[in-house]
Every structure is written in C-alpha cells, then in structure tokens.
Length: 596
Image 1 (cartoon, rainbow, N blue to C red):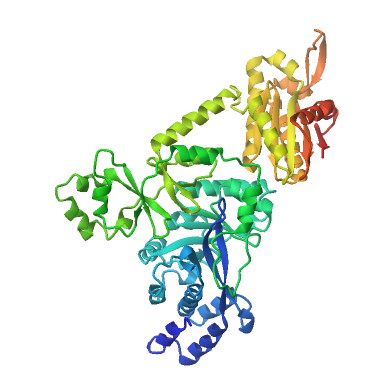
Image 2 (cartoon, helix red, strand yellow):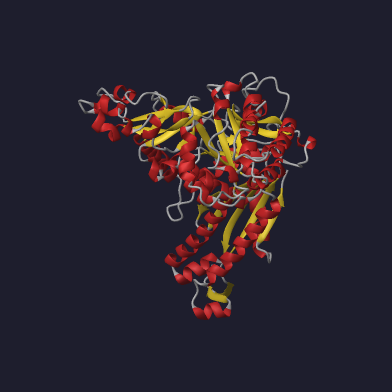
C-alpha cells in the first residue's frame, strides 16, 4: 500500500539503483500511521488529523527525522516521502468519517519545491479529501526555492499549507511573511508553561494578532495541561493539538467528530461569558459564501441588484474561508455588456481563487477587543470574516466594526482615568469579582501607591505630580501588557494590578522590579541639589518643615492559590488596608499576603 511510486521508479533511467529501491521498499512496508486530532478551541470540533509515522522500531531508524535524513543522503528523499504520503492517505481514507476533517501531512523542508506532487494520482482516488502540507522549520529550505511560487503551486493542486514547529527553526518570521500560509502551528516550546510565563504569552499574542490580520489561522501544538489550554484559548489561538486532547492513535476504525475533553473544558470554564459571541451574532452579516470551484460568472449574479453586497466570501469544499472577492474590483465586468464573456476569458484567471483577496479572520467567540484589534490592520478595510468551528459563519463589515469600536470606546471612557487612560474603580471591582470566580488558576492582586507624594506635589506643583503619575502608569501598563494582566487606576496616586495564571515568585519578582525602577525614574523629577542630598525638605501636614525621602512606590500583593473559596472583594480590600503601612515601612516596599 502506497509503494506504487517506488515501483514506477524502477523504469526511470535517472532513478537510484535497484538495490537501494528494494531496501526502501522493505523499510516502508514496516511503517504505519497514527492520527492525532486538531480541534477547534472553542467548540471542540475536530478540524483535522495529523498523520504521524509509527512502527519505526521495526526499521533501522530511531525516529522519522533519522529516516528522512538517510533518504536524503541516498538521494531518494522525494521518492520516499511521496510513498509515505501515499500510504498515509490510503490509511486515512480507510477510516469511517474521513470526509469530515482535513488530513495534515508533514513535508520535509528539503523536499519542498522539488517533488512534482508524485502522489497526486493517489489523492485523485479520494475526491473530497482535503490535504494540508505541514512544512517544518526544523530543516532549512533549499536556497534556490521561491517560496511564494511553490506555495501557489500547492494551492493550485488543491492543497493547504501550514508552517509547522513555528518559532524554533530556521526561517521564522521571514518564512511566515513570504509563504502566507493557511495555518501557523506554534511550537510546543512556546506553549509549555505559557499560563505561567509572561514572555511566552506576549510573543504568542503578537504572533496571533499578526496572523489573524493576514487571514492566517493559528494552532497551539503540544498542549498538555488544562491551564495551557485556557491560556492559549484566551490568547486567541484557533486550534489546539496535544496529549491533553488526544494522543496519536493507530488502529482506528472511525474518526471522532469532536473532542469531549475540549467540550468539557469549555463547559466547565466559568471565566468567559457569552457576551462577545452574542454581540458578534447580532451585528455580523450572514452573506452566502461562494464555493471556490464556482464559475467566475457566478459573480455576475452575486453582485447584481440594488441590494447586492459589496463583497463575496469565498470558501473551500469544507467551508473554510479563503478570502473575499470585492464588487469594486469587478466593475468592469459587472457593468459591462460583455461581462460574462470577459469573465470566461482565461486571461482573467482559471477560477475564483485567482480573484480572492486574503481577509482577517476571527472566531465568533473571540473577545471583542481582539476583533477590534484585527480591524485596525490595513488589510481589514473591507471587514472581517467570522468563523465558528473553523468554518465560515458570517461577515463583519467595516460599518459594523466601526459601530463596535464606538460602543467599546464609550464603555471604556465611562470608567477611565482621564490622565492615565487606565480603567477605573468600576472596572477594577468587576475584575476582582471575575478573579474570585476563577478558582482553577493562581492569582496575584496588587495595590500600589506612592510614598511621600504630597510633599513632592506641594513643592514641585501639580504638573510635575502628573508627570510622576504618568511615568508610573506607563511602567505599569508595560508590565501588564507583557503578561496579559489587568492594570487599573484607583485614583490619585493609587493603582491596581491583577496577574492570573503565573507563579507567585515570578509575579512578585516583577513587582519588585517595578518598585525599584520607579524609584530610579522618580529621581529625575527632582532638582539636582535635592537629588544629590537624597531627601526633600518640605512642610508636613501641620505646616512644619521636615525632611522627606524621595518619591517611591510601595505595594501589597494578595496571593490567591487555585481553589481559594469564600473570598469577597471586601475581604481583599480589608487585607490590603491592614498591610499598607507594613509595606511602606519595609525596605523592600512590598508586602506579600497569602489568602485561602
């Protein structure tokens, strides 16, 4: 099964010698395939299955990489990999339910652009099968390969393209930029412990925003814990894969259509309400999508009439969105007397795929702030395609998005500090309440306020006092932004920070760094003589002159472990109030209190 490609090579004058081919025939006969599901993060629906080699213990090779390295060294990499792909396809299509999901096949980067799709006849025996090539970054692409032309060749052959092991290989962002893939699979290195690592979350957040702005779907590889799942889902990853969800399995008789594990995780999660999903449902347009195989003349009917839409979403055979066709780009055809004949002209393109423009894509359950962020991209001037379970669900026009932006801005402005633009007391209380409902993760709630601010403000004036407040707020925003935390401004020189899902030691270390850096920053606000003296002479509250230390900040960090129960916002506030003076009098300027 799957070895007909090697049979054909025996009649090729340029093929390797017969003993080499016979040896590989025996090796490949021992290889079998396991399949691991790729699931939609918010619905649990199985979007696809990755084919993974098994049975290598019966061969001379310890792992797939060693097998492909040997094939490359012997000059048969393309032939061996094509035979493996053919075997994977035949194994997959022998399972019940194979039409319901995509098949993801790993492609060695050294073979990219070399193989003339030798196994395509095998694929043609299974009409309706959707295949996506996973190009790994762990091997370097051949330097002479034009990645954009190669990707286009794959797409014309009906294939999707994913960048595998993203972030740990050779090309990184350069390959992502040039390839414009359908999927980017973020490597396990960035997923492991992402719930506790601010830097990983910041990197993942930036990558997801970039990918979605270009209409690229994102996948988190190697999810092994519930906390990793929730962190990746909340960051905006579209798909998940890993041992928590399902291990690769051989001997399957049928493919499950959904993941009970993911369904259970979403059902039991109390942190995320349905407000975002409901609002998107209300404002999105349910434009009928056009299958990519439709004749180009279908656009004439789609855009005809006074109430016709301005864009046509285009989907593949599995209703996965490919992009948009814009009415304004077809005016010369739509309004032409000979529009039908012009659209039939091959010079315009072979099918709808030649007319499609990539569009930002957002899942229907994506937080509204992330939807609005996608709209800020230049590519989103026409709107955003909304998906549900990986499939096309509707379209958010630019008008609807502007309405959402306006609603968000009004809601934010109603409870935003006018100086720092940080959320105010109402948002802070609401966030504390949501934290207390989330008992699966650890949390740190920190109250921070200035020390000796009044004498500083009285001496240097309100403008300099505002500068100090702004200086600290920018430091606080940077700390919160790096770890997906929440920062608020209680008022005056009082601030709030909430960090969820990270280890106590890391959060406290970052708070200590914040305190130290602000103390250094604040020195620049004093005159040279005061700065050299290290103290300020000013009147106290009774009007008598006295010496005050230079401006600093102190804080109380309330640590809530997973499972903490029975706590209320009032209890948190009381704990902070009882420990403020201890924080101010300590050398570290930080008091850590553990509750629950």
